[in-house]
Amino acid sequence: MKKYNIWIVWCTWAVWVEMINCLQKLDIPVEELRLWASSRSAGKSVETYLGSIQIQEVNETFFDWLDYALLAAGWDNSKKYAPIAASKWVIVIDNSSAFRYDDSIPLVIPQINSDSIGDAKIIANPNCTTAIAAVALYPIHKKYRIKKLLMSTYQATSWAWAAWMQELETNTKKYFSWEEPVVETFVENIAFNVIPHIDAFQENGYTKEEMKVVWETHKIFWDASIDISCTCVRIPTLRAHSESVILELEEDVDVEDIKQLLSETPGVKLVDNVKDNKYPMPLYASWKYDVEVGRIRKNLVFWNKWLELFISGDQLLRWAALNAVEILQSCINNHK
Image (cartoon, rainbow, N blue to C red):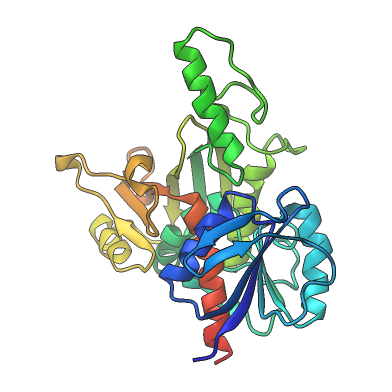
């Protein structure tokens, strides 16, 4: 079996730990794994399933002899290093938003549109909010066609930086000690609070996080006709985002058929037994590869063609790590 040289770039982010775990669990054939970061982290050693790996300082010359690069480096670094890698025939899987809205670069969720990868040298990974919803919504769209999508999110503090989770933990402790919270990473204190503000506000009153759901869903589904509105809210949980979704479908809603459809969808786990209080929650969706879907019902206001459901998924996996490694797996399969 052929093995591949794989680099994870900017590996001090929380995402890289999950990426390495996914490489192991998905049995990716790795010849050599290297970790790259800034000068602050260079020289440190990390224990992995492949042994101890020393972090190296990222630079413009290190893409030689490389097959795949997983970038978790942020917009600026992705813009700088991805084209350099691609020019050396390296396949780059990028977690930032740097290339998501470029029509020439595929935006991929393998369960939906792996065939769009083709011979691309740069492949974009969608935003976490979009990725979690899309895995569950696409099979519904294929069969019933979604006309309108209304979404409210409940997003955990574990984005890419461990510091975000640390601030929640620190300020929760301060709350019980009657101390003033320290606000450094969020716009307000996140402990015992919810913040309806994720990313920068746009001219239309929506935040960029909310607009990503619109832009990316249209691109991944190849259907810009879907009307989409989203409100994104940060909540004081450590891991796993949740989403309340209302859909208008072209066909009349058949709840039992949709439950059956989702139960057969790869990457989705149906958790919908209200009699036993079983429904998606961050507590149980955390650390899971599958997105959990439940509370499936006809909408009480609009009824026959309107569906409601609730989704929870571990965004560090479904978006950042697992989806990136599944893209890598698709690339390997395409080039066998």
